[in-house]
Image 1 (cartoon, rainbow, N blue to C red):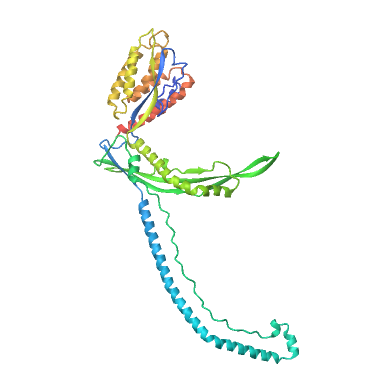
Image 2 (cartoon, rainbow, N blue to C red):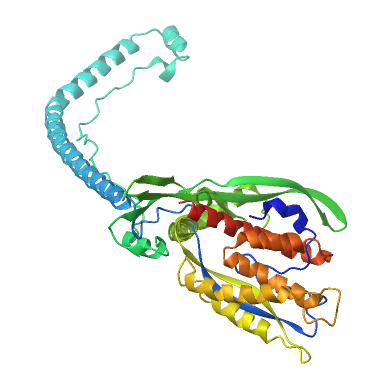
Length: 463
């Protein structure tokens, strides 16, 4: 809308602003705010046209939120129960094997007890024979054997007395409880965050809105450090200051489907951006950063489970309504009125009343029928008054200050009336005035807002 004369706008007088959403324009008092011109701040709602409008035949929508957390939890629970059954079966099998090993050990003990006297006698006999041979050695041989262990004398290797050698008793392996996924009230989420303003809930020729929740992803801490210099007792010393940050995100896919097919099916950029939890202060060691995260990890993740869903679903709702619906937006601006005991400005007072009444009707319907009718009344009055404009004559009824006030109100009125051609013409004419620099920024705000409104207007009316 305003691009053809973006450069000339830098010359335009004041900041009479179609301020961006919820932006109150503060007008300098040095030029416009003379004794006979007052500013009245006004706030009203309007229905913002969609940037990606649906077919105009579509009046209804239905919405739902999908999350496979319950299915995953069922699988985890089933796997947990199966693992417990398997552990019990393994335990019972090992118990049976254990009982068999115990019986076998008891049988071996009885056998060894029966054989023990014979083994003991054989060991004693062998020892006595070896001692007899040792005693037969000469004195020289015995002296030579002193270099050997036990001076070469034979050992009495008696068999170990039999005892019951019990096998290791099996134990039941404990199966750890699975970490379940958080389950959300999907119906409540859809009712809270998937509402298309300007549309009715229904199934006939409806847009189907679906949000699919992804899992919360939390990364390991990223640790960074800086080499620092500190001072103590008048001396400097070097140290490293560590900081940590933990990245996290939860992707939510938005799908917008009309009866003719899917028109959007992806994660909005505002949702896909990674966010971070960071240390508030410097930490003296890398292990200190890890302790910082370990000490709060469980609590933080539990909070993020709900927080990321609420915030990202709110972002999804904003994206949905900004692009496809008729979002109700609150707008703040300034309307200028002229008051003077010496001149009759009742016509401009009537224009003000019609203008404000029209602005307050902007939220009734996106076609702005009733609103445009009242705004048109104000436009007609302002246009007629401008025919009297005499900016060189300070005593004229429509002198410079009053003319500038009318321009202010009229340009905004043109935009809300969707009369962008006349808004452009008035801007171009206004650019010929010698404007103070302080107003240029306000006019840039006007330009950006007007441009965004015109882009939505074109997109909607091309559908």
